[in-house]
Image 1 (cartoon, rainbow, N blue to C red):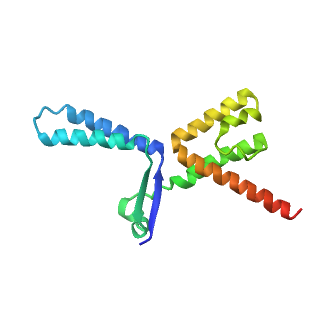
Image 2 (spheres, helix red, strand yellow):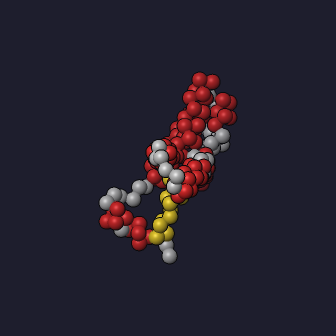
Image 3 (cartoon, one colour):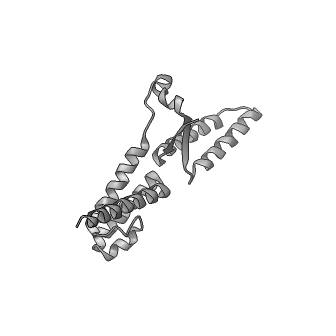
Amino acid sequence: MKKVSQLLPETQKQILVESLNLMQSALKTLNTEDEGLNYKLFDIETLKALLNKTEIVIKLPFEVYENFTQINGVDFPDYTIKTTKIIEEFFLNLIDLTGTYFLSDYVEDVKDYLSSKQSKKIIKERNKLYKIFGKNTVHSISCEVSRDFINQINKNNKFN
C-alpha cells in the first residue's frame, strides 16, 4: 500500500507542546480525586517529552491523502516543498557569497571565505534554520544542494 509521509516542522511541534501545556494547566485546576486524571496528566507529560528533540513524521495511506480535503475540510499541508526551498535558497546564497560548495551546512568554515561580520550573520541564519526545521533536515538538504551544484559544474565542464 502506497503511503505519503510528511515531516512536521518545529513550529508545528511547538503548537502541539503549547496546546498540551494549556490542557495540562486546565486539568490541574480541577479539584478531583479521579485516578484517570492523574494518568492523563502523566500521559501529557510523556507526550511533551516525546516532542522534545525528536522528528515527527506524519504517514497516511495514499487514498486518505488524495481525499484529505474532502475528509478534513483543509488541504494536506506540504511543509517539505516550503522547507526545501527556504533551505536551498540559503545554501545557494552561501555558495554565491563564498564561491565554494564545500561548506555544506558546516558554516563555521565560512570565516575562511567571508568577513567576521558576514560569517556571524550566516551562522545565525543557519542556526535559525536548525531551530525551525531541525538539524537533520537542514543537513540533508544542504548536501543535496552541494551535490546538485557539483553535478551542474561537472555537466558544464563536459561541454567546455
